[in-house]
Length: 193
Ligand code: G4P
Image (cartoon, rainbow, N blue to C red; front, side, top):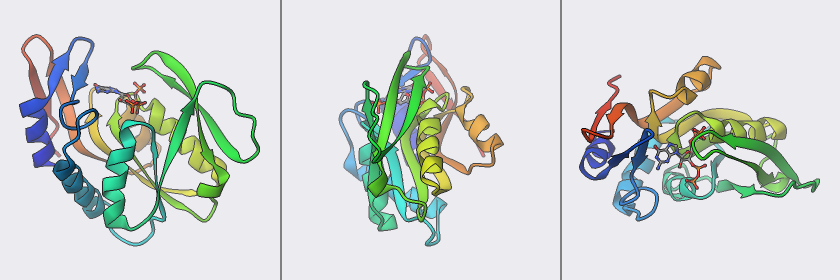
């Protein structure tokens, strides 16, 4: 998506350790006009009427999922992060081991908001090694729901998350795929499809 790529080039900052900071417009301060355009683009990439729910994870995924949901006309459900084991019968649980953040946590979603009838679009801000998306997939499978696809704002194409998911036959659509970035030079290149 050209608009997002241009914004990343203009306002993104490359940090040591392959971290891309986009907090001036995407995941701290938020440019709602950009979010809306991203939402429209997700709708264009996932046409049809199959999707019944959008699933994301707190915190940064929520706003993007909400912007997209306006064009799908379906509810957004976000998985909550929790550091205590939740033994309730009324939630699905998955364990996420974040490589990027070097921490482990559980994510939960209420069984009331994810059922075997659902056709789910997963949305998140970043796809790096795929730990967060894998946890969300586990929740969907636990519910017996169907995965329609994964929509990502920024995929770090040089990390393995995207290729592992696609290798499993999951449809992954990323609005911008970073091919490489260099903290010293401050350069970012994008994958061309
Ligand atoms: P992982 O497997 O390497 O842990 O990362 P994953 O693919 O699950 O990517 C999603 C999470 O990693 C997101 O956090 C995202 O913020 C963070 N992340 C990965 N690479 C980058 C990066 O280059 N820049 C930024 N800004 N974030 C990155 P999350 O679990 O969704 O938490 P939150 O940030 O929404 O609270």
